[in-house]
Length: 145
Image (tube, rainbow, N blue to C red; front, side):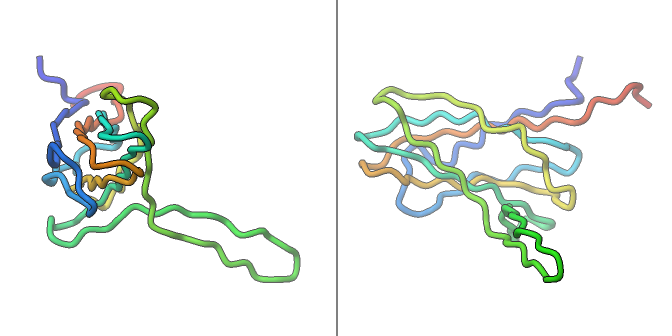
């Protein structure tokens, strides 16, 4: 039986990270609600780390990076300004071996038809190896029509 609630796709961008973002191929995410990333990272030197960002697109050509919202402090009798900035995530390895970790689940921007992941070496050491597998899931429905 086909798993209609989940889609799993290997999205390895490259075996070796670089000093600039390297992106995975795009993945159609239109019918899904959440994504989780299964990430494996192996540092090449002490202090190695990997940073990633997730981008979404309507057409597969113009990409929008996820953002982080922070509310300002509210005070009576004055206006408040909230801050928004682009969101990136960093993982710093704890050892010299290959490490596996899960990021998510995170909600998929519902405007999006495609998503991709960009990874970059962000640690103090030499470039490491990184792999990304995306798991897309739907909200489970009580009954299938």
